[in-house]
Length: 119
Ligand SMILES: [Zn+2]
Image 1 (cartoon, rainbow, N blue to C red):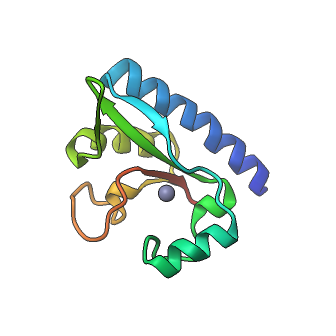
Image 2: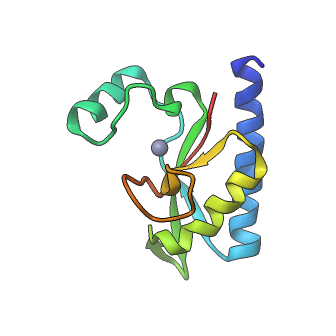
Image 3: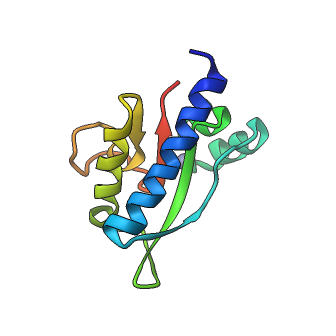
C-alpha cells in the first residue's frame, strides 16, 4: 500500500476517533501536533522530548491531542485509555502512545496524547 493511501485511511480513522470521544465518552479534544518536519523532530530528539528520529509524525501518520472533561484539560491515562482501545479497534496497524507495549497496562515510556498508524 502506498504511503498516501495509508495517510488517507489514518485521517478517516482520526475522524472516527474524534466522533467517538465526543459522542460516546463526553471527552472534547483539541489538536496538538500532526505533521512534523525533520528539522522539528531533530529539535525534539535533542531536547529529549522524543526518543526517535523515525516518528510517524514525519509520515503524516500520527497526531497528538489535548483532552477536556467538563471543560478541564487532562492527560489522565485512565481517562484516555478508552480512546486508545477504540483507536486500536479501528485498524490493526493503529497504536496508542499510552500503550506502547500494546499490553493494555500502564508501564514503561508512555505518550498518552499520541495516536498513530504504523506504516
Ligand atoms: Zn505524537
